[in-house]
Image (cartoon, rainbow, N blue to C red):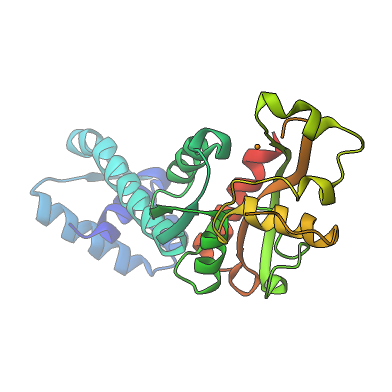
Length: 262
């Protein structure tokens, strides 16, 4: 079906006059007349009858008019959908995750991502904070969650990252209950705490990074757990600054900011 014929049919039916219909369609009157003739031959029915006042729909024309309207509306929907697809964000978003999904609000973020950008596919891998950062830097991940702020905490190449601050939080250092006097005695300086035996974590861990910086600032070294001792930090969402305008990454940054603004 040639939709230009249906458009001519609808325009003539609305105007009731070939001259006015031709003006609406930016065609000549003979061209519109030929389109109506071709449509009638294709359908095998007469659509209009001539009167002294112009063209009137026949009974068959009246019966087919709503079908033609729906057909043209559907064609317009197809064109709009195609235009949307041409401009819609698509691709694969590779996400590095840490900690537990509930704390990250990961489920809500992924749900919003699917609802808002259905053509973005996600691929996730879970690991330690430093491991995620390195893979964002190497472009193995597009975005990732991170403990701290690589642009502020002395992270190597930290200036390369774009950081969305999600929420501040406090880490508590725990010790056995029997260590109350050893831990809470005096001012509990980090230098004094460093002399106690610690359960240490791998270099990729946020805990390693946070405590190493604190001990370094205190000119102390841990021997290798302390309620009442806290370490402030933040949960961040990171990507390389040079990639922040890439469509899928920009979409993720927009959604994550909106999610954590609540």
